[in-house]
Length: 256
Image 1 (tube, one colour):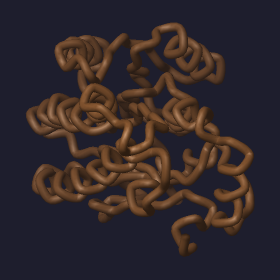
Image 2: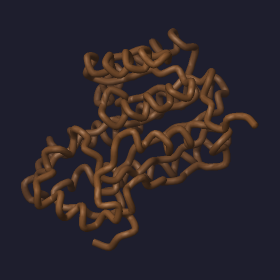
Image 3: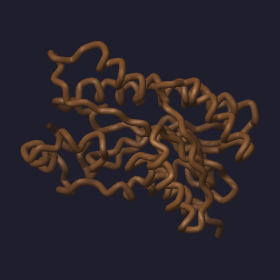
């Protein structure tokens, strides 16, 4: 029986692959045989992920790009195409957060977060999907959302709004790209100790989260790999598009 999750011969672009969650997912895709293009603003962190993939026998290369600077993403797309000829999987995992209360929020902070989490994701997808369509590559786009996209959470208003937008974009583009054989899905992580949410995890906050998480713990970044590998594989999830897959320890099943 063939391996449903084998990604050998595929190239995956991990935008935000230098982050905690994006890096963990990138390593999981590499473990299944995919070549990884690690894209991020911080090249030192991107290189750490690349070197770990290579140390485990995988193939990866780091690329400097910032989704809030779309010219840099256009350049990165050209560089990746020169390196690998194209790509089959796009992971959108950029993330920026803030705990500013709503009544203290200003337009500059709103724009800063939206430029990364939503606008950057939309137009990065446009750049990479356009080339997939031109090359007639049937593949997968995986967006990283958040539990705050569906459950209103205090202190992360702009982040929550941006991730709700990611859910909407995911389902719209699933319909848009289906005729081209490109599937678009999103993973909704629960609470993981990623960089962008550490600063809001006070003891009271942790206690509140645990009360609404049936598994009574935070997620480990590697626990996102299974969902991402499933969505990346045309063999395993070839009829799955427009889905929002929760990996949240049961958080979404609880009423707050």
